[in-house]
Amino acid sequence: MEDTLKNSYGATFKRSPVFYILTRVVILFFLIIIIFPLLYTLSLSVRSPDTVYSAKYFLIPYEFSLQNYYDAFFYAEERLKVSFPKMFLNSMIVTTSSVVLIITLSIFAAFSFSHLRFPLKESLYNVMIASVAMPAQVLLIPLFYLLIYFGIINTYTAVVLAYAGFLIPIGILILRMFFEQIPKELTEAGIVDGATDFQLLLRILLPLAKPAIATCVILLFLDTWNEFIYAMIFMQDPTIHTVPVGLAKIGTSRYHINIGTYSASVMITIIPVMLIFAIFQRWFIAGMTMGALKH
Image 1 (cartoon, rainbow, N blue to C red):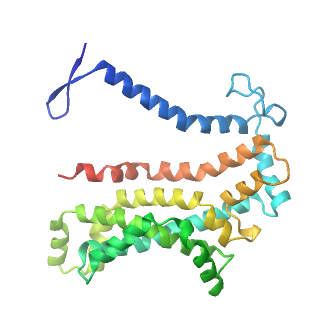
Image 2: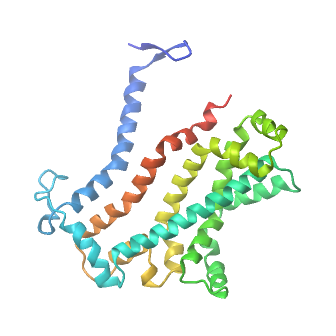
Image 3: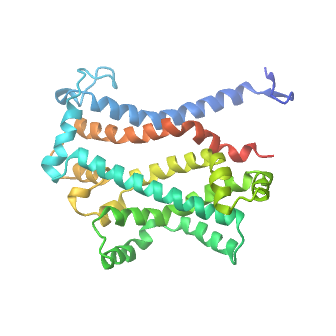
């Protein structure tokens, strides 16, 4: 038997029980795929070193312990000549610097593409957006020699500039779409009051663009925090290794590492991502749905 439902606009429609059950099964399936590895890693990280390969009820440890988290902070320093807190700090410096630079440049570029007129505007925009499809590995060798030429290889600057070059188009794409959805009456009123382009951006557009900026911050933070290839090639000095590079070297090192300690290291690296999402989630959800609400 089908249920008759009414939506917020007063229209009625029928919901098939089969469709209802099928959608719930699909959602549950994908939740298991996404959540299970995280729960299993968490379970390994809180097991005592002696019982790390066994559990009472698969995910529930025989003996709860935080020893793995303690060991995670010292293992890397003993084996890779860089402490885990230092790698964590390196990742924070690179990620924060990259996100701030990308967001700043993207805001000005998106404003130019959405509100200013200049020759070949759409052609430049299309070429820049098309560059997003280019694999990062294509420019790896040219960038490597370019960074050597300018003498900034093995520095934070090398990776930050590389990230900015590849991720600015994403920021521009999101922000331009949002700027163009803001009613023109608001900017026209500012122009009538004598506002300059910079004042329009600073006092009218940016306060309204919090959802789009939050969306950019979360997406860019995820990309730069988890990036591995550029960080490994452009920062080969162990003292400036980021967390992904350090974890990869720990996992493939000739030294034995307890799987519980490695899992604890992974769980620690997830904390900043969870914090960023918790801080910006309200604006992030609004930013992801902004296109659907425009009429």
